[in-house]
Length: 127
Length: 425
Image (cartoon, rainbow over all chains, first blue to last red; front, side, top):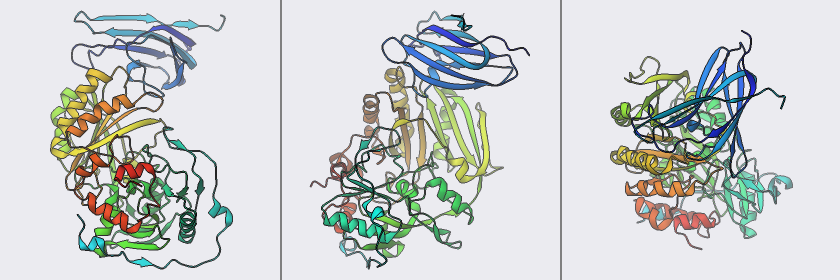
């Protein structure tokens, strides 16, 4: 399989909704990264979290086997630090091999649930 | 209350003679900052020493006493309460290692106190023995884990202190105290969990179990689906515990079973499993740094307490706290300062990243633990001092009596231990 995607991605609009309604974990509000590794080799991924008022935190390290996808709730990350809910943040994803990164948010804070999915910004290294 | 046997002088063994000790060993290192595993405790001891045998320990204790210095023993620094802090002499047992004797019929082995849990477990495996239980991590020194009341999980299984059945202790006057089961257990019941306040161990004899294979299974489910099952797991005599995740209400059950005797847990999915020697499957190595508060509640209040903790965290703390809560069980014992003295317990541990503010969260949850008659882990974060600890321990006075007998001048006390034990200077 020809590698698909980029090695660096940025998602500036992170903000995990603090409230949830409905049975959990199905209806927990979350921010999620969906990472597709369409190539043959394993991807070693490092995530760095940027905040408005303090230094970046990271790396959060994950691995994704070749020809696999991983959907990672950012709410669940604790190593090196939990990301506070209801707080503006951005994340930069750096991978050892090309991957495709999508960002998904589910907000169940009100009865009218909302979900959105956006592609991350792929950096091709020319900027 | 102190019985006549407690007041009787304890048998002493004359200190051995021997060659002059090396100046470097006895002088140790000075002026170096010590920090614990999580980074929340830092201090600079007057001196740090690494004796290699009992004779060197005796000489160090006598020198410190003659110079008016306090003495504290230290392990690998996995504790996060300031029980080791001192500006005097800090003694590490890390050079006193090795398996010196064993008895397969009695299932007992004698070890140097400086061995780490993993290291000792490997040595015991070589003679067909294993720790009856052990904690979630295995980096502590055996004697540190014993002395602070560290435990594993399993309703019928005792904490690590209970496996101590004898040994040798250098006491404040520089003499050696041999202890064992032959003295009516009174001294043993104090020594087993003594926070380094009675002396420096130079040898420990442990009652163990035959080495065995266990099948570890990790089951994922949700709190609502597993509520009844969680209560069952806390009632049956099985090695089991569970994690609860505050940001998803998920639950991870862990069970350790002899192969072929695994449980069937409906509506839960095995996500990870391993089969191996008990020591390798009971503990795991962890690199992440965290702070921890842990209390042990009477068994019949345990799940109610957990449900209150869960509700409080969901309502007030999960904005900042992503760490899971760990729930375990421990059998009752008769060690004076044991958190499970006289009652089987349910143990609830809360955690937070060491790099983030944790104390407000811990204090809020501590209120729930105390409402349920909890006793804190001696080596983890808590806010109690003697005034509130004393009523929680029916044999408190007997431990204090033994301590005063062995160390009337408080050589092994630091200011934190004085406030903890109510032994003001």
